[in-house]
Amino acid sequence: MSLLTILLISIYLISSNFSNKNEAKTFSFKETTIDDIHIAFKQNKLTSRQLVEFYLSEIQRSNPILKGIIEVNPDALFLADKADQERKLNASKSLFRLHGIPVLVKDNIATKDKLNTTAGSLALVGSIVPQDAGVVKKLRNVGAIILGKATMTEWAAFRATNLSNGWNGRLGQALDPYVASADPSGSSTGSATSVAANMVAVALGTETAGSILSPSSANSVVGIKPTVGLTSRAGVIPISHRQDTVGPICRTVTDAVEVLDVIVGFDRDDFPATKKASTYIPHGGYRQFLKADGLRDKRLGILKDFFGYNDIKTYQQHFNTLRQKGAVLVDNLVIPYTDLVYNAIVVAQNIALSAEFKMDLNAYLKHLVHTQVRSLADVIAFNKISPLEKLKEYGQDIMLEAEKTNGIGKLEREALRNITKACKYGFEKMMKENKIDALMSPGAGIADHLAIGGYPGINVPAGYDKTGAPFGISFGGLKGSEPTLIEIAYGFEQATHIRKPPPSHPQ
Ligand SMILES: *[C@@H]1O[C@H](CO)[C@@H](O)[C@H](O)[C@H]1NC(C)=O
Ligand SMILES: *[C@@H]1O[C@H](CO)[C@@H](O)[C@H](O)[C@H]1NC(C)=O
Ligand SMILES: *[C@@H]1O[C@H](CO)[C@@H](O)[C@H](O)[C@H]1NC(C)=O
Ligand SMILES: *[C@@H]1O[C@H](CO)[C@@H](O)[C@H](O)[C@H]1NC(C)=O
Image (tube, rainbow, N blue to C red):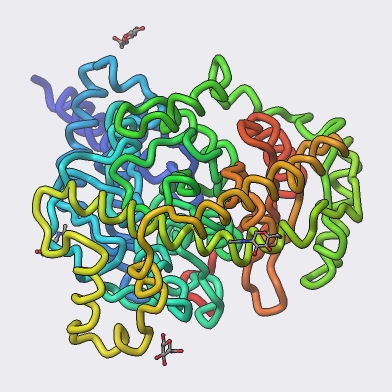
């Protein structure tokens, strides 16, 4: 070999080495989307290992302050290497769009791996779940990597009325990544804050009454609260099978919709709810509703006095934008049977949830392979002797009330009847008579209306207040109206592009 050849080969090796490094550098990790990642994988500009390493370094840097992630999966890098290998071998699995992409799941969603599933409670540390939750099975089937567990308000806030949003006995208080003193909201706190702070791109949250929509609003991210039953609740630490639902929290409507497409559908372990709701799933999935002209001719309802309080100027601007994009705003709506609806939300809902929580939680705990608590009574007893001062300070009044219930009796039946009536003659009547495609609210204002009927909603970032704390706008509709809500949410997002990442340290 001549000296020249060696020289040329050396130059080639050095430059190709360089260009590889440059390529990895040209991939922009911050605010990246599923589509960006998928394309970078396909073009060999990024590996799952690089992606997971990036998130692990961000978690190492930010999580000690933000406390968004309660546990990191010790197998994350191993799973990333496996995904990279599958892609190299062109395995059919690697064609899925979530293949090799890290996902954070709320700590009340079971994973049968090295991660604990605890709803933030010390009482469940070390417990062993029988299997992956239904939604986790669906994620793994398409090759997604479970990066870890997101922190949450302990027991999804169903422990004490005065529990601080984003606090639990295991990790303490999660912070809002934008403004440290702001309320990070809950109960899917870590799912929203971790996505907002670029510690991950995709997360799952759960909602019983506001727990996806509200933290999404507070952290400038997109959250979808699906129709109850559209996503499986099997393996999710429950509050109520009547209201609980699992949904995606991401930075863009498109990403949230991609994840929704993966997690919806029948699960024999959540029967009959997932069978019934599967009739809502459109042929060809949800991505087809990401339409540039999604707002055209949409009738958007606004409840009387609903936008009166916070940042009315920003919302007025948004209303103008929505009209410019072809939407019709129907203002001053009043939900009929106001008293009945008020009773359903404020009184009847709590009566029903209280009894359902005890039954559903006891059933969940019974099915665990190993645990030190087998019933709500055991959890209450554990909380009483817990050494954590905060646990004592916060109390457990909601759990104590729930423990007093005894199944669905006369009072609960009356409450459930009231709820059914309020939904049918209140929300549904108003939506149908006024031909409303979506009801809008500042933040998660409509969450309770959606909660009691199992209706879907989507939150999209809408602005930042004087302190820099984010707020969103929510769109809610009738059961199975996800296609329409997606068109509206995407149309609004594309017309406004409000989301921006938080500062590198919360202000
Ligand atoms: C990978 O497999 C798909 C089908 O499974 C095929 O269409 C494609 O051409 C393959 N690519 C390579 C590089 O082998
Ligand atoms: C799960 O909890 C156990 C305590 O029982 C702990 O040793 C372990 O590190 C936890 N797992 C993870 C992944 O943090
Ligand atoms: C929370 O409520 C309990 C009673 O359930 C009370 O003892 C405690 O002082 C309250 N804590 C805070 C921080 O408000
Ligand atoms: C049900 O509604 C009726 C009429 O509004 C009310 O008087 C009653 O207290 C409600 N009961 C429950 C359990 O919510």
